[in-house]
Length: 147
Image (cartoon, rainbow, N blue to C red):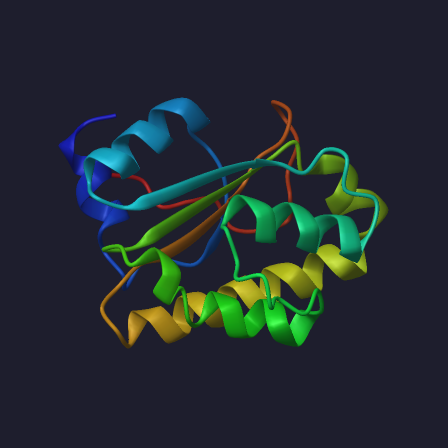
């Protein structure tokens, strides 16, 4: 990815929840080069809310006091004081199973991620959640912005 990708990744006004349309490795490299904290999570084995929250909390190194519920998830995403960064990129890989088989829980999780992105916009920091899956699969979320 080029410097244009790094530029839009740093734009907190564009950040939010989107369907991943780029190679996750390249995107992660561009985000890291832009000074953003990057989390690549394989959620292909998440079978319920508990699995999803465990996977995200471990990857993002939530505090040990994390309550493993939606309210605690929202609180942690709006704090992130244990990982100060210019912004954050969460790449959810292999999302098709959780998105399709547990749609209500997936939708709730993405709404919380979107609310957190809105919160960070007011702080001038981008929080991106990018939903990845197999080629040709659509998550139902808008495609990520282009450079």
